[in-house]
Amino acid sequence: MRGTMLYGPRDVRFEERPDPTIIEPTDALLRISAACVCGSDLWPYRGIDAPGQPTPMGHEYCGIVEEVGSAVKHIKPGQFVVGSFFASDNTCPNCQFGYQSSCMHRELVGGAQAPWLRVPLADGTLVATPSVPSDDLIPSLLTASDVLGTGWFAADAANVKPGSTVVVIGDGAVGLLGVLSARQMGAERIIAMSRNAPRQQLARAFGATDVVAERGDEGVARIMDMTNGLGADSVLECVGTQEAMQQAIHCTRKGGYVSYVGVPHGVELGGEGLFFAHVHLHGGPAPVRRYLPELIDPIWHGKINPGRVFDLQLPLAQVAEGYRAMDERRAIKVLLWP
Image (cartoon, rainbow, N blue to C red; front, side, top):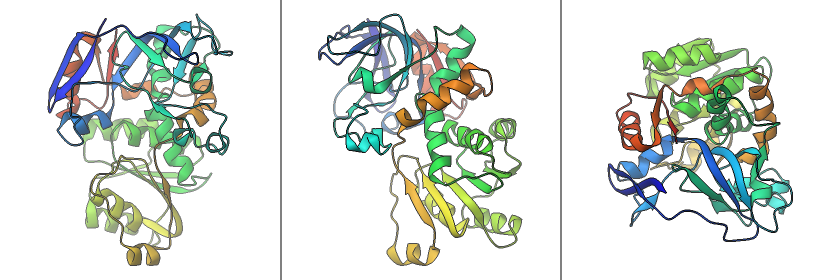
């Protein structure tokens, strides 16, 4: 098969790769229905955290089960499934606490920007939809694999409650779906921090009540002015930079909650500053598997449409253009059709 490989900074190639096969008895083999480019893929693409050798790319996926290993009991060939970027057994203590992305036997699922994908620990990782979906549902179901699941975790970890005031820092796909998640959890006021007009528009469509374009200290001052000097109940940090983290902490009211789901790069927290901030801080790699059943259901019944976050769709063979479009911020998120 042909699949996506990253050779070095801004060097993405769609080339021949070995066909995936069942290796372990707990594996499943999927025929990919749709894949996409993730914002976190841009870090190695830009040369940050770059792999030392050519690497298969892609960790967001949904598709049809074609084959399962001998130990797989619940996932069946012919089912349409959605899975997480971390494979998990969903039975270990960490999984039972709801942190499947820290499963004691976790494996990173990679190479999904291709027509076929091997998924380890299939029974604990994959969730089947009620039946094979129509094509129009596939983009939204694909978001559940990562960006919607991560946005939902951001809202959950920030303790978003009915009637609360929420600030979302970051207008990428995760931040925008954090807005959607906060709206679904009943937030009364959702302030999206964005200076990009199309992203501002989508944030409002997903439920943002206000948009703030300022960043850093100016952004904090704006939030404080809007909340009568109090700060927000919940702040979702969906970027992963030092500026975004500091902005999040300083936008939060005393006793409020900050979640952080952007992959951190150069983020350092001083003990004294955090001590006097008096905020709850929680985040990490989203335990997407925990949320998959409750996210698939409203998508399936047309109650939410997170697939709107895909503003560019390309054939998988044009994946390199998808990376360029996101790198240059010409696209929020790129959907890839095999």
